[in-house]
Image (tube, rainbow, N blue to C red; front, side):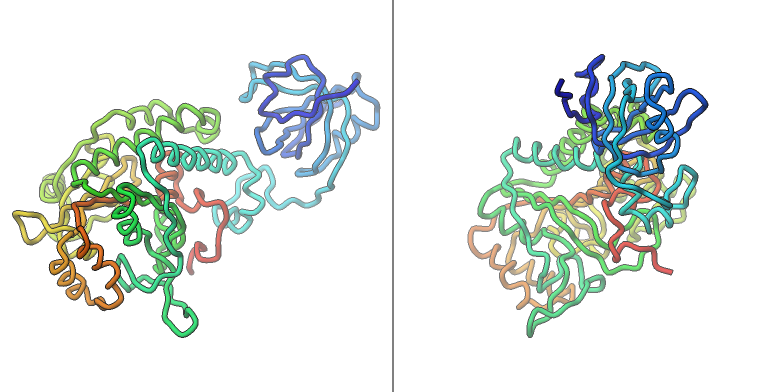
Length: 433
């Protein structure tokens, strides 16, 4: 009889059938007559039960002695188990060791975040990061679905650039043969060029900030989704932003229920974030609201974590804060038509203490005005000549925004540290002493 090889995630399709699965051991416990093996295969986690009376003596002894993270082939009968988190288990008949494991460093006990991040290459095997990465994968999948459905074209911006979209103080410098070059802070400027060719585009790639941040919300290397839309004003862009966020949240609810349960994330809380529209307040109104609730803030300051947390929690859902002061925003934004001190821009603040998840604006479309803003920012107009060209040849109103993938994931999953939302602790994302 040929035994079908399956993955754990497909156990529901093979109840009362004998199957073969390649697995790793995550934990075990045993008594005199039974051994319980906690197993994973990369698709899911479930339990293997080894009954002493049902297997030969060598198999039962192996089940008791096998070490954590040993890889093996197991054969056995799938049973439904309503008591388990997964809902199914396997009654093991045979065990064939593939690869031995000894002194696995991440034992079934409490470990600190720093220790786990130092061993991220192994911690990915555990149930919590496994759930986080599955949710990350769903957010990426849903991102492509959303923008493809809305008629966007995906373009790729360069990772090595010669100019700075967000200012020059936090750039990673390198040399490109005989020229200065920098790791990209953003794909936005290139997305604007793409929008002039394709109408609606988005970029999705790695970005870098040379800031030695010690906060739980910041990374030095992260992935950014940056749509740019021609013939679109800010209010229309805000509608795209909230629809996109609600779409992602709903897809995570629909497709990652087990992963959210693993992370103890309350789905009922997430459901609130799918209800549109999100509230909108001006920066001026935000200042007054903060002052009225005991915050010592002056007009013109950028909000920190306490202020952003209060504002989003006040509305109990994501909130757009509109029209920030020019002094705290980048040069490419379009000034407000009736005020000379603010830009037409917005940040989307997430509740529960996660702060800004999206920043966006309408872009300046006038060549002379943009050139003046480039100079005021202390930037070299020659380096931005190609960007200025976009205002010379059929300039149109256009708007865009950027969302950091890891920050968004941290909010959706309810995790404390944004570093937990990255696949690997790349050197640049280690905590600085």
